[in-house]
Image 1 (cartoon, one colour):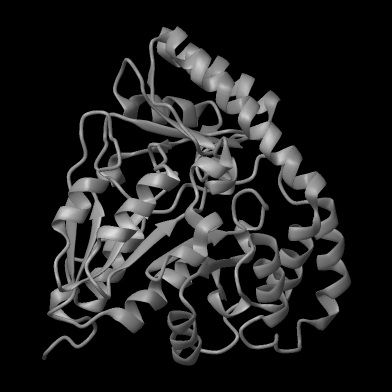
Image 2 (image 1 turned 180 degrees about the horizontal axis):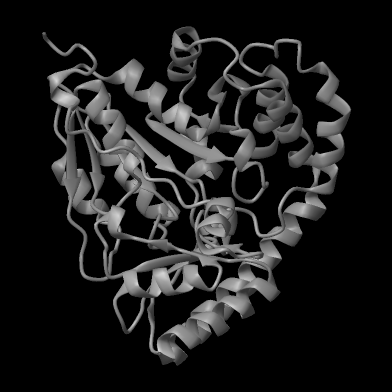
Length: 366
């Protein structure tokens, strides 16, 4: 009997590998307390303002939300300074990535370009859409190879993906370099800049091309409420893109992808400057702490503009990861990125950061 469960060309497809959960580690290791620093989540949790709004609207969840989230779209447009017709709200920025492939891909003809050791969602969507995924090598310092990406593009390239700040290295491309890349790409090729971590760059005006959005005809910028706004579990993000691309996307998607509570939470989060600023202060303080302290215990650490750092411990990364689990700390080993010697750790609270550093020092001392 023939197997119709999956198309032959995606039988060897590699799925996204999520981080471990606190509940699972407690169960496996018999721990009462576990600190998770693996998934780049907000160290402060959920805004008290958002919690209140969620409680206020919980009784409305039997209603459908308004399709395409027009109130949220208008609020985002005001916040970032672009026309509302250029904004698409989504079920996380992952939905926007998926929809870009759905509306742009020509199976068997199109190609997309990214660089190695990057977010697996791009490769996943390319394979599902039947388009060629071209991966540009990075140098020894894991720099973002923008020039090489431009050289790899041809008349069949529909999108070039740049994650900035990059996951897992934390490196960021300058706004000037992204502008140059957008200008040299082939006609009908979109530059997709995934800015999931853009809130944590400093200074912000040096890194995002959104401030000059009206100068571009081929720029798509992806952002999320999962990180700085603390809404990872509600799955809400957005894309900024040319108006005709946004219109096509809205006409092609399934309805009601942003749920009612997610929209209300995102609206409240945009107005909660206190929580947002406290988050940024906590992350930047923690980032400086890790960048200073990790080398002191023999780890090589890379500069970061994100809410995490990537480091190489002086002993096998897998061994360090497992030893930390036994002590109740979840970090992210980077073998799934093709970087088996390295570990990624996100900033927690000040107390969590100190506790993690003490545990890591203990592991490395043997």
